[in-house]
Structure formats: structure tokens, C-alpha cells
Length: 325
Image (tube, rainbow, N blue to C red):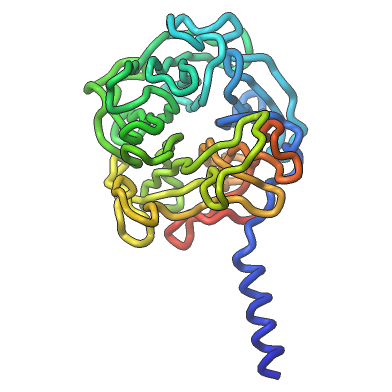
């Protein structure tokens, strides 16, 4: 009897701890670093992702089907940097009655980088106006000007950074103007840590702000070997009462601290056929009234190939974000 009870408890724990698979309908959509938003006028979701002039996908439901719908800047960015026709890591928001999209211009391993911004009334391809650079970086800087995310919390705040000395945040006076010079406030990571893709988010159901970031090594298309187990991409988080931190993990350590094991609380890691999830952003879906996380991942059974779109619901009722069905 005791064995049966123990087995039942173990089985129950497995169910409780199981991470749900991505919502159906997106496993054929090739993306990296996706951002999502809903347009209530067209009643469509828009997903923006790395590639070309920032790829656009649309759907009438989170479960698809998703349609390729052109790009944001098909004629390249006006920023005169290497990589200005192959833009990275967008973030999108509705600000003061218009849609605002931040993007990155760079090349692999380079600090000659810039974050640009474009605006649109509808988000459809061909409707975007490129306003050019908001933040730039060059070799020797403490930061790399890529992976932008925007939050409007006591004013506009732009979070950015990848590797180097970590992820930072500066205030903006408007969508395209710095209120103070970078690097600004240190949000997450440190020199030597593989941390990037910072995304500060507050759920309507939570009193906390959460700094999500991607930690580890992201496999690229064509990869022939995996990093050691546990060192692949994963989504970690810290929380704070302020949108500018300091952010701490569940153990109480700041996510800027250089500790072993590394700081930050796991939100989403490899599981089932999902390998190395990351490049995440979060959004409060006005249709379902629920928080969602979007990210890219490589299917375990297709390692070495492209990454695909993952979408999951997130629950904050425990005080920390949990991926749920």
C-alpha cells in the first residue's frame, strides 16, 4: 500500500511539474526572437521576427494558421551599419495611438551595433516609417546595442544588451530620443555570462515587474553539435517592485550577480521535443485575457535545422511566472 501511495505521489508530482508543449498551430512557422501583438481593428495577431527587414506573420488566432505577410522594412534600415538589410530581435508595442517597433542592426560577434525604431498605424507591410537609430554601440563599450524591448511604466524605458557587461535599461523622452545616455541601469547579466534578450514585463495580475532573459547558447541553423546539457538556451527571470530593478531570483540573489550556480529563476527550458527555447517576449492577450510568452526553439528531433515559433500561456498567481496550459 505504501508503495502504491508513493508511486501515486510521484506520478502526481510529474503531472504538476510537467511543462506544457507549445500551443498547436505554430510548429511550422520559422522564426527567431519573436514579438507578438494583437490589432483589434483587423482582429489579427502579428508576430515579428529576426530576418530580412523583420519578418511579419499574421493570424486570427493564437493557434493559427499563421500567414507570412511580408516585412517591416523591405528596403533595409536607414541605419548605415553592416547588417542593415538583415535585422534582428524586434519588439513591438502600441504607444500613443500608433504601433512602434524596435529592431537591431548588427552582425554576429560585433559591437558595431544599433537599435532602430519604426512606426505604423496598421502594422501591415508597406505601412512602416523608419525613424533610424535610438541607441548605438561600438567596440570597447560596456554594452552591445541589440535585443531591444520597451515598457511604458512611469515613462518609456528601453531595455537592451547581449553578452559584454550584460543587459541595461535607459529612459526615453519619446519613442526615439534618449532621456539619458547608455548604458544606464544594469538589469541582468555580467561580463562573461551568456545573457541576452532582456524583456521587462508586468502582468495586470501581478504587483511585480519581471525581467525575463535568455541564458546560455542558442543553436543556429546548421549546428552540428549541442552544448553540454544545461548550457543551451533557456528563459530565466528575476522580479522587482520597480521596472528598473534591482531584479532578484527566487533565492533572493540579484540577476546581475556573478554566482555559481548562475542567478535567475527558470521559466522555460528544454523539454519533450522543445530544445533551447529563448529569444522570448511576453504579451497580455486582450482576446483571452491571459498572459502569453512567445519564443523560438529547435525541435529535438530536427536539431541542426531552423528554429520555430513557440507560444504558451503564463500564470503569475504564485508570485512567479509559470508556463501553463
